[in-house]
Length: 393
Ligand SMILES: C[S@@+](CC[C@H](N)C(=O)[O-])C[C@H]1O[C@@H](n2cnc3c(N)ncnc32)[C@H](O)[C@@H]1O
Image 1 (cartoon, rainbow, N blue to C red):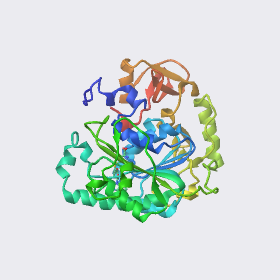
Image 2 (cartoon, rainbow, N blue to C red):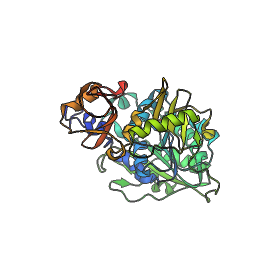
Image 3 (cartoon, protein in one colour):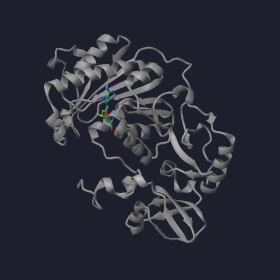
Image 4 (cartoon, helix red, strand yellow):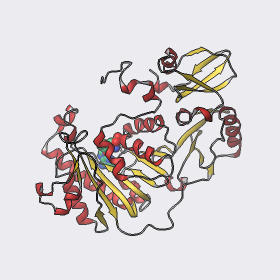
């Protein structure tokens, strides 16, 4: 399959833009299966950009519960937010924080935590020449040290009875088995949990670094025997019973009454269903979100998306946001323009252009074969694309 942006490249196909799929290595996708997040749980992806695993976790949670997608590298948070929006995720928040600051605020809050650790990348050498170029023994040791620090913070974030999944895409046992052996030696309140039998998943290699035999219970995917690239996973369970007083998903409202009235009135014209109200939050930029977490719990943290971005207030008007469109079904809106995948208007939509179209004035959900692409606005016999400028082709 071509990687180039041709009509046939999977990453440039309109279905990809519509969030029908995410392109991901099968070994990487095992993370979602092993952590097995449930609808309604509180889940944290501590190193989430660009969002392959976070979008998979979100899909398995069926947009129920709380998903925190965190990325320490600010530059990488935008693509993370874009991917979650493209896939129509409605229960996630995107943070740009260090593991230390999150652990200090949210100790014991999460049912499941994923650490997809920065690593020496040996399992991806076949496709990543930079990983080959940057490899050295010192890189491996540096990554192992960094991963131990991240795991120490991650442990604090898991509630008693909760799960912590550590993953890398490297073979180096100084990272993998070495990091988990050190973790277990320092955290008696965690134990290795058995992994399900997945095609191509084999056990750990403690003998490579003189680690305890229990480390056979971790999982390795090998590129020559498994479904994809090389990967390593260890599933850890925190001993104990969950506290009863964990916070619920937030259903309050932090939006002035005047803006709420305008929001209701505008969305009634656009949607064929009730506009969301539980968890509404107006931020300092006049953007309106549905946030799953009480704002008191994240005040002062660096947040890029405090939830599902529904609308923005501009010049006394409410404009529905692209992220709202991306999560809607045709039956949930008043007006739909459905295009066939090979219709040239699809490309016109992506360019931000317009075309002749008669019908009532207002916002129209443009779909491709029923999958949402974004908003267009109808008026004076024309439908003008409102596809976000930063996404245009
Ligand atoms: C393997 S990538 C994550 C890939 C992502 N989970 C996905 O599936 O798309 C590792 C991430 O860890 C982040 N990272 C680097 N140093 C970190 C640190 N000290 N703490 C937390 N994350 C870090 C990197 O910026 C990078 O985005």
